[in-house]
Each structure stands twice: as C-alpha cells, then as structure tokens.
Amino acid sequence: MVDMNPYMGLRRKILSLSRNDYEMVIRQHRVHAVLVDTHMEDSVFSVACAADGSFSLYYEEGGGITGLGQKYKELGMAARAFVYGAEQALPVCEEAVDDDLPGVDERFFYLVADGKIFKAASKKGSMASDPREIQILNFVLDKVMEKFFESMSAEKTDSPGELE
Image (tube, rainbow, N blue to C red):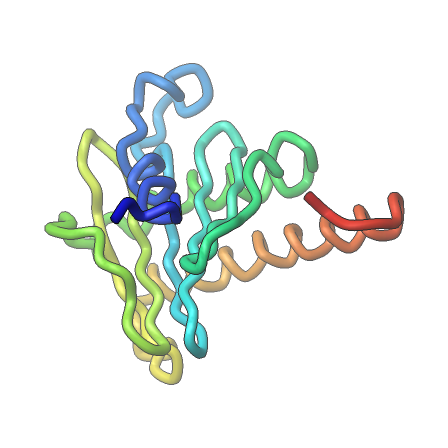
C-alpha cells in the first residue's frame, strides 16, 4: 500500500536543501534552513523556514500551507531572521543521526548548515532548563508563529471565504 500522505517527504525536502540554492541570500551565514517539529496533544506539526524567507507549515495528518513567506512580507522577514539567528544554537546542537518525529510534549529543531543536519530537542514543561540558545530558538519561533497567525487573520479579514 502506498502512503498518500506527503508529510514525511516534505520534511525531508527541507532537510535536503543545498546551501548553493541560497548562496545569494545567506552570504556569511552557515544555517540556510530550519525545520521545527512540535508534538502537541495527539498531533505533530512542522514549520519549515529557509534563508530566502520561505515559510511552510505541514501537518502529520496531511495537508499544510507552503509559500507564505513570499506572500506575506513580514512573515518572510521573520522566517529569514529565525534562520539567520539559528546559527547561534549550532554549538549546543548535535549532528542528527535521524529525522524522527518528537514524542509527547517535545519539540525538535533541525538546522541545515555546512552540508549537515544538526538537531536539538526541547520539552514542554522544562524549557526553562534548556540551554539559553535553545530557549532563544523557542522564543523566536513563537514570534514567527505570531506573524503567521497575524497573516492568516489579515487574509480572513481581507477576503472572506475558505483559505486554500
């Protein structure tokens, strides 16, 4: 039986992005893409950001939204800032040996840099004891998500009807 849910493929696509694809926008920055997997309640969602301001949101159950960083300027700027700032967390990340999904109340950060994938984990309820660099990743991700929700709210206000 063929799995019709593209979720894992979308995740792997962001993890396989090449630095060469972003050479014009990243210059001296090492990190060019970040994937964040968050397990909430009975579901996992993934946020993918790239150095060009790309922002995508994928749901484990299927579906998602892509290309919003290009459509919404402020969201794109927040996604780009998140990717650039993620470089500060590299010293506390380990090279990833898998691309597993997080367990209950966990969040995994995957940073794509230097032709490798680096990974860090954070757990709800104990984030205050995470290394400072991971706390900052959580904080900045929250800011990116605020921009996402603002963009979606503005879309609903500007054009009534169903979002695609």
